[in-house]
Image (cartoon, rainbow, N blue to C red):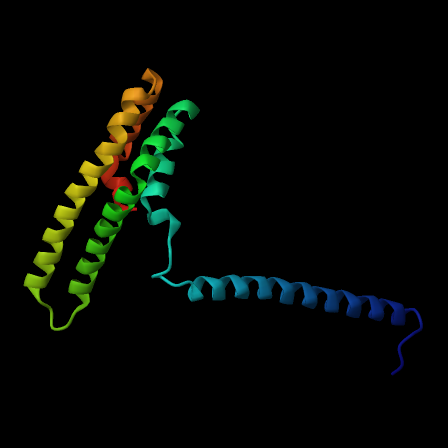
Length: 163
């Protein structure tokens, strides 16, 4: 069987459309594959900007009027090394709990000690953050303090420190 001359251009267009569709599908599969590889290659122990005191302050400041946000950031900058150190100790205390839970044979005393250290680190973090927030709030506008109060009642400092 031979194809008619009119069918040849139609067949050629179909092949071109099929190849274009295949190329487009491979392109999208490549993009999805690259995103998946990047996600799985990301180091869980690498720096996580969401888990710093500076990021926490920025999240709080983003809810405040601009002038009040700057007052909070300025108060933080004056104490940044101390705050970051205390915040880092708090984060490490959480890692100690995870390690104690994963260790075999399980040692309940090690877990209890890690949890006790986390409570102590949490209290130190609260006191350090108060050293940032109180001076900033003292200089803030009434609206800024109200927004800070609304934020603390909505998500609380506990929710921030857990992030």
